[in-house]
Length: 439
Image (cartoon, rainbow, N blue to C red; front, side, top):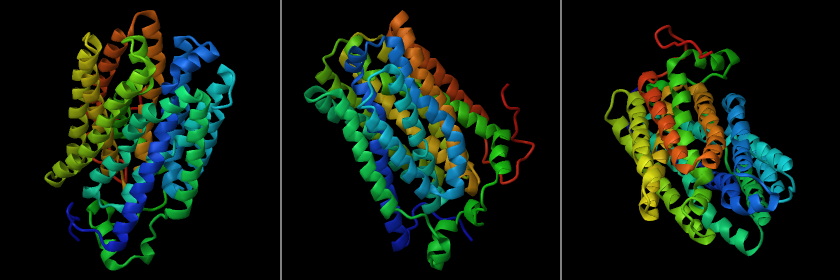
């Protein structure tokens, strides 16, 4: 059986399922990032209302990322065992209730708890999305749908300052949390009512051929075992993706968590002006994610090494992030700084989309969610550290060394992808692609 060409038309029933799945992943992803971004948008008002220092705000901004990162490890295995429909549905309900509760907290400690639960609830979103793409798209056609579902993150982040600033300014910052929490519960109901995981036993021969035409997907994926999940950590590819995504997400989350505060405190913009200025880079990120998905599929279709081609896309984008962060930190002009930051966010989301597409190419069929979640675990260790370290560096010196530090960390991440991610992980661990786990 020949590999499925990237341009092969999906059978009508598969095509409908793909459209439904990607639409729901986009909507849930936008809500996901609106919820994450609410704290960043309302940062100055929350700090004033609760009497928080910059260091405490950094801790509050990072609380989500710690729980989100830690829960990536069990969530990846659960996605591969029980399927994305159930797990993402449960996650939507949990994170929406946690988000709404943020509108009722009155102390720093309770706010930290609400953000921790938010991270737990949101943990299934992207591993589930990676598994949905793996289930409904053939191997060489996964870059574009990955770019589409990943584009929800910058789009949600771009919409957050525009939409939530209206609630914050005209009502109260608490309403921003309550309204987005209710929106998430509505999406949870729709997801559980509409989305279904594929059942290949009910498919026609043409439908099965479309999904199983690639060599990596010929055999039905067996149920994931703990030994198979654990064996992922014996591969250099896994460690390269984990460490590399740490650097990528660290730099991205410096902007995601601190950009509105940075523009008001360091560059002295008003709150409403900040709402518009902070949205521009993330709309660019939306375009970056879509562009990366298309470009990743294009170069993969012309390559004999899907892992290498998708990895190279990640590395090029990350090096560009580093290059444009340096002038963003140093220039005096606010306009030039916003342009440089826009390029960085464009490339950050291109790198993220390519990283998730890389997970679908590098993992065996029954460990796509697991490898993607392990990569995301590394990423959100960086995401958790970024707001804390940035807050304390800015409080001690300024945002300039904070941004330059982030650029250095992203550079190390790019090298990790380049030197460790060499080939796909085989169903059985080999001795040629192993490394010792770091102490």
